[in-house]
Length: 344
Image (cartoon, rainbow, N blue to C red; front, side):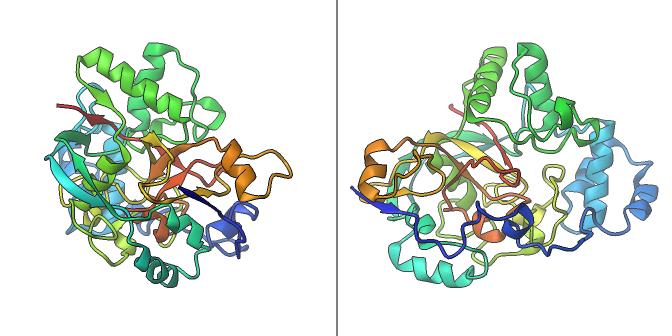
């Protein structure tokens, strides 16, 4: 195993302002919500929660209508959000190729040349390799604020999401994914739900998460190889906030899993380690004592971090790639949540 440093970096996204890191201009940019929400609200007020939920995931409806349908549904009681019986998708056993072939690094760098993407980041994804994955199930949607609230109420745990202003539950965001909580909270949530239901809930492994996103095919995104602004909640098109789960049906994975790209990044069960035959990338996601610069020093003191996947509403589409390996950094634009897997 060899070690590579994430330096030198042309742009260190963690040393500049949040708006710069999100590639937003310094002046006001009003992308807080889709257009004509009032008109859609007036049209949808008579719909039942079930009807609103269907509209929220209807690929034939414009985004603003889906957004408002899901928002109203969240206030009325979203039937898709079932805290003790989450909607699950069956994933069959398979031998799956995961990771990035080294010869593809240059192509990805060129594709996202304006995003501050560094070669060292992509080398975490190398080499491509085969993994045997047993059958499992994975949540159709990420864990929502409502579901996480039930966990806090039942356990009296103190892992309050930093996205809840002053630690107060945001009623209007009940069916939005919860963020940002530490990985220990995600683990504890899985253990809590397993104990309450008698089911084998847990966080998905990295390989399981990637397989659920790609369907076992060599694709860049859950929907294909070309990035689409309408398929994921990333910073390209806004609304620069979380959105209700499931309202980007164009981003559905081959297995029918939603929100695996964009909205919030998601913890996996695995700490960062190089893939077999790969390099240890000692980058800015690892905390080192001041003055520690050399790769040898970093290798000797290396302490890992939990891998997250999937991109978020604060980041550009390069982070939403199925193979991208990332982690939590202590900045407000790192929006990290989670979803659960279930062993058969």
